[in-house]
Structures are given as structure tokens and as C-alpha cells.
Image (cartoon, rainbow over all chains, first blue to last red; front, side, top):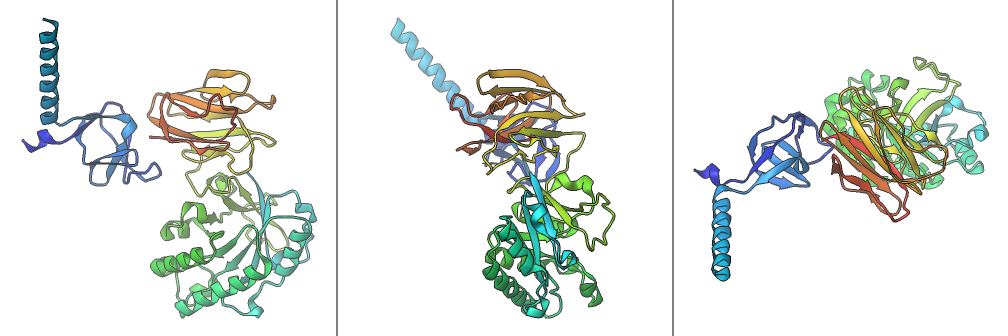
Length: 88
Length: 324
């Protein structure tokens, strides 16, 4: 349950390097497998996907936590309903 | 970016006038602790010649610190400081760290004393802010010498592109370690570069710049071009057996040109036109940045984004490319 409230990142491309620190000059630890990861931290244009594993933020999509998504969805729905009421 | 010569007592009596077109000379000012008897006998003459011929010069001290280490480093720093204040080198003060016969004879191997040597390095860099560490690749690695403070000595000329300063013999015989009577030469590619990955088939690229033409290829993340010299970057050429590149260049008087693919000249040569910005698309994730006149380095951008400036008549001066 807790995990659903964490921010996630999706890596959609192959061959993205994973670095040991949030720095483009940091050593490459491995290459990233395209999938969804927990977002643990953000720094210096990088996102942390595990301890000692950072990838360049430009190449990932950051997803909002599910709870936040639902709140936003509800807000959106309610604003649409309001608009509809105004139109009527 | 140019040529620097390393001279010491081994070249005593040489006339440096023929070097007046080089980018600098690094002069051995002595070795070990502070004693005039340990000053390099050719130093004063070479400094005078550099001043006479208007050649930029730096000083280096051959370190022998091992026994009574703490006292030795204080004295060695004092040794350099004395010469530094006297000669006022324009290229800074360099500490030459290596496992020489003296150290080995005393059972001292630097890798076993990395933390002590790091302490020494830090004290040196704190004292001489315009200098650095002169050592081999192994020392550079275990001392973790800051990138922009490193002068790597190597006798292998295939590694010249790796470093700010790489040592090799000007005879072309890179195996000739007994260089007595000959000059040693060092290539400088950027004043603020460092020892970085050498060009590989996976990724290498080179820059065509004002007054110098094509510079040697550099490896991933290295600077192609120059910074601090006011020279325009005119074109680049990217080679890779791993990724496919498409490059667009924003060129003075021409606007956007491209795409240029692997191995092609991206930009112009022989027309004295400055490149101002670059856009690169690659089938692998890459990141790159451009150093522009009056601006400095751009942010690292990703595939398909422009780096540099447009519509401001500012020259691009250098570019760095690496896999993201």
C-alpha cells in the first residue's frame, strides 16, 4: 500500500546509463532496463532509483503518486462538472 | 591545444628560442626538501630564457617525501614556495609524485600510503592554487587527483588525447625513457580539461577550430575545441561504431545546416565561419553541452535539443558529448 504513494519514474528507452552519483561525470554502474522505478530522490538533473543508482532526469518520465493522481482526477472531474453546470 | 615542453638539468644549456612558438614550458625547479643544493641546476637559466622569449612557464618539484613524511612535505612545499616567489611562474606550481628508486629503496610504495599522499596533495593544492599534480595514471587514480589539477605523465603517445598534459619524447621514440639530452614534450589540449576517457570506437569526436584546423580526436565527455582562447569552433566530426548520430549546426551567415551523420564534417571549414549552436539526434541516449563566447558552458541537453546560442552572433568554442 505504501508503495502506491511513492513517486515513480518510468524509463522508456534502452541503454540509459545508471551512475553512482547525480553527476554526469560519475562512474557508470550499469545500464538501465526500461521499466518503472521508485523515485527516491532528485538532484542536479538526476533521479535516484536505488541506493547509489542515479539516471539523468531528462530521459525519464516522473509519475505522480497514485493518491495524488486520484486527487487530481477528482479535482478535474469536479471542475468539469462545475463547467457543465455553468453551461446549463 | 598546443605544445608544452618539460625541461630540466637533463637539457642544460639548450637554447629555448626555438620553442618560442610553443604554448609553454614546464621547468623542474628541484627535488625533495628545501635546500639550495637540491635546486635544479638548469632552472634559473630556463626561467630567464622563458622570460626573454616570452614563453609561458610553470615549475615542478620532484617529490621524495617518504621517511619523516610530515616534516618532508612541509619542507618540500617550502622548497617550491621559495622558487615560486622568486620566479613567479605563469603556469603554476606542480608536484611531481612518483615511486622512484629513492622511495623504493626505503621500502616506501606510494599506493601503500595513499591517505598520507592525499593529505600532501591537498596541502599542495591549497598552497599553489594555480598548479596541480604531475604523476602517472596509477597515482592519479589512487590519489583521486581533481580532474583540472592533473598532469599525467605517460610515455605512450597513443594516450596523448587522454590528458591535459601528456608526456612523450619529441624524438617519436616513445619507448625511449633515457631522454637525457633530448626534450620531452607535452601536449595540452585544454587548459581546464583533465585526464578523461580516451577516444574509443564507441565514441570519439574532433573539432575544427580557428587558426588550428582539426584537433586530435577526443573521447566521450572530453572537450573538443578550446576554452579561454577566444577561438571559434567551426565544425565537428563524430565517429561511433555503437550509435548513429545526426548533427545539425547553426552557422554564422548560413543558419541551420544538416543533418550530418557519423564521420561527416558537421559545420564548415575554410570559410572562417563560426558555429553557434549544435543539435544532435542519436539512436542511443546522449547528452551534450556547448561552450559559447561570453556565456560559458550551456546546460547538458538531451537528444534533439539545441545547445549553444542562436541569433546573438556568439561563437561556439567547444563541445562535449557523452552517453547519458
